[in-house]
Each structure stands twice: as C-alpha cells, then as structure tokens.
Image (cartoon, rainbow, N blue to C red; front, side):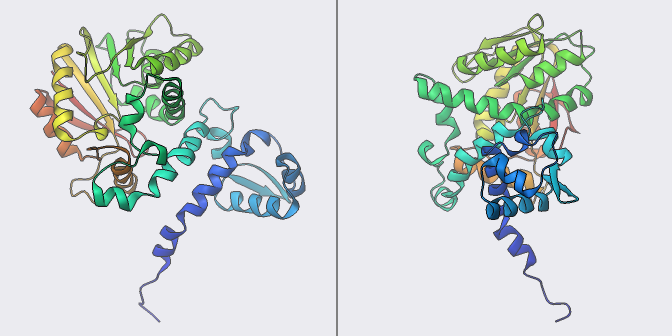
Length: 341
C-alpha cells in the first residue's frame, strides 16, 4: 500500500547481530590473514579453514555480502577494508578489538535490560564492569585481562591518533602526558609527526608494560616513555604542556570527571592545553548513532559513565578552570574538545 510505513528499519536493527557475529567468527578463525594476498574458490576457502562445502560457501557468501570479501570469476579475496584492518599482516589490525567485543561486550549486552533497570554494570564474569577490570590488577588473571584489553584498543586507536597529529598544532609545545594512555598510540603518533614533542604514557603498571612494547616497536624510546599512574589515587605528574585523554571521561559521572579535570589543570604548565577525545553526542542528545550506542555500552560497563555532548564537556572544562574551549573533528565518530589554561 502506497505511503505505508515499512518494517525494514526494525528488521535491519533486529538482525544487526547477524553481521557482527559473522565478522567475529571470521576473526576468530583468522580468515583474512589466511587468505591475505590470495584469490580462492569456495572449495579452497573451505580447505584453508577446514570447513565442509556447505558452510564454506555460505560463510564466503556472507562475508562478501557485507563487503569483507570480494568475489570475481568465482574466486574470493580480501576486500580493501579487510586487508587493511582484519589481516594480522597489516599494522592497522583491529582483530584484537573484534575478539574483545566478541568475548566480553557481546556477552555483556545480553544483560542490557537488567543494567538499565538496575542502573548498575553487568558483572565482569558476564562481560561488563570496566571499572572492576582495571581495579583487578593484583593477580595474574586480572593483569592478563587488562593487557588483553590494551592490545584490543590499540588497533582502533591508530586512525584517530594519526588524525590528532593533524587536528591539533603541537609545534608550539614540547611535552604531552597521555592520561590513561593505554598502548600509547596517540603519544607515538604525535612524537612521530612532531620532532619537538616528547610524550609520557601514564597508566597502570600492566598497561605501561604493553605500551613499552609498542614504543620499542616504533623506535621512539628516546622521546616516548611510560609512568605508572592511578589518576584517582595519585596527583597528575606536573611539567607538561598538553594533557590528552581518549575515552576516559565517558567512564565516569560528571562530578568525577570535573575532579579529574581539576587535577589536570593544576598539573599543566602555564599556557598549557587539555585535549579530550570522545564520541560526542549532538546538542539535543539524539545521536549520532555510534555515540548513542557507546553510551548504552557504558550502562553495562560502568557505574556512572555515559557519552556526553560537547556542551556538557565544555561545562566540565569551565568548572575545572579551562578557557577558550573549542571542538574539532577527529576521525570517524570521534571529536576533540580542547581547553586552555
């Protein structure tokens, strides 16, 4: 009937996990590394993955349908996006993040309605409660989980880190502290692009160990270093011109964020700047979709976190003492808010 509302949007949302689980299965089976640089028939695809004919054909067709494989003359090969981000041969490999989403986030989202009803994160054993993850750095299992998470975040940080070096002019500064800096992706890219800059990745001890591996890999040990920091229990190290935070403030409520930003303000050199990278909501908080959905993830992952709009982040920065606050695009859904001391 003409003008009738279509159920297609509902159907697409309802079956969205079909595509995500297909991606997750492909990464788990290391599909894109195994066929990297090759063009394989469906039969050869099955042989590489040790699959029978029926699942091999269906799997290859599904991956082609979502743009992860390309099909030509009956042969399948990695699409450009799969080759760039899902093959272990690529320096921008995101597979560790995909595996983390599969093993941790997917299970946590199964309890979303419970978290919404109770305003509490899902237990770690069910895939949630990010704060508990980082509080549990005293035993081998906890340390391993933290380091696994850090590796997972590295791949998805490379693109935004490259964009940061272009979005903000570091030429008039000398030093940056990357608070909760994880693998050090942002520090490494800034140091690589700006010879005038040194950087310090400040994070928990198990995370610093991971960052040190990436620093050595990039050959930047002389200009990028790590320091162990629990920013709730310790003061922020002083003497830096720029403080950078990526996906930190969405873990906490506004009161805790302002407390952290005040500590950062006190630590910065005169004329310094703070840069906050987040997937920000629009002013009326109706999107964009990645930011709104990440906010839902914070419901299952944290006790008080959510995604904020630029107006909300700007207000936090003002309360902490920062001035001349501005917003700039970064990469994908990420934007940066900048405040000056």
